[in-house]
Image (tube, rainbow, N blue to C red):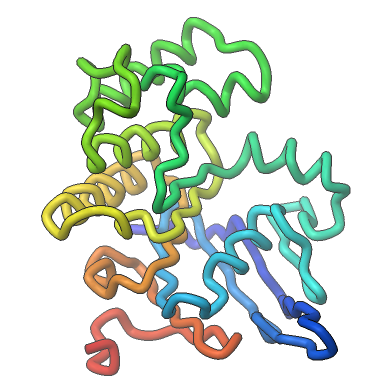
Length: 236
């Protein structure tokens, strides 16, 4: 069960791009609040703007209008370097393509976000090993990503996303490269981990199977965000 404490407030968020002589509006005046400990699903077809929204929330990009507020920090007004530092400490990422570094071992991949922010302590390394045990990969920590299955690689990516205790975890089509059975296993693991550590997670996906795991569900269509009842028949 999620807390009533909000960790993210998005207000009046818009993003447009100029293509030739035309302006294309991708996101149009979006507002969204995420609360501590909840798992939120963002549904939308490919090209609907889901990834753009995640990029704005994480500070990888800046909005054409509106604000992204993490507590007392207005992310959309920070300089690029400050946004990068904030992102490394406060946000974890899980990608469809896993984005593991092939020349690093499983453990080194998990420790990478911590290493980018400073020196890895013994306690942090011990915690990373514990997380790998939790996701069922404690015996693979010295392996390299290319010998792992797709499901195993995604579990490494999940471990990496939570190892540095981020406030918010963003997942962009996290099951897109997995078969149905593996995807279900990964999603159940995500739900278990997020609720256990009381972290907030936003999953952008076109996979409606994820709805049953969500605390809240939103759709993104033609740049407009709408909250739905997870049990609503309109989702079928």
